[in-house]
Image 1 (cartoon, rainbow, N blue to C red):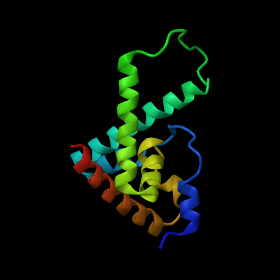
Image 2: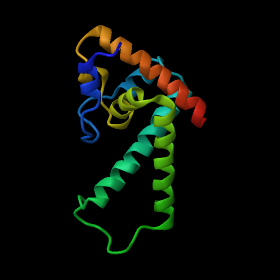
Image 3: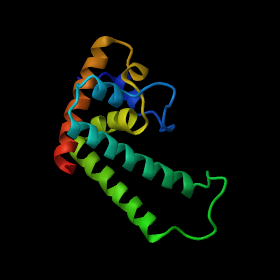
Image 4: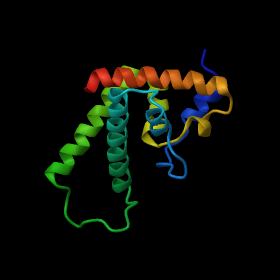
Length: 140
């Protein structure tokens, strides 16, 4: 059963990439806890996440210097592909695992940033392993 407090932590609004500490994906890859396909799936998710997040920020006028011209066809195609990747991931993983992927892979948080007990970190690491394996099968 999912603890409502965990659901609240994972579903907080998106704030951007955390850069002050090494993220969980890099740590797990360095310790060989995840294989190459899982790392590739995590980085593809992050790339799609950041592309869509950048497009959202641009559409809200958060960029100080914006080009007066429209976006190029290649950029529009990349954004569309990124959104399709995220839609497929959400459909495959479900809301909870997708939100966890967004926090860990998309925003770069570590498990210690989100969960305070060892049991919660281990449980969510297992959920992350399953989600990365599923995305690896979907994308690679």
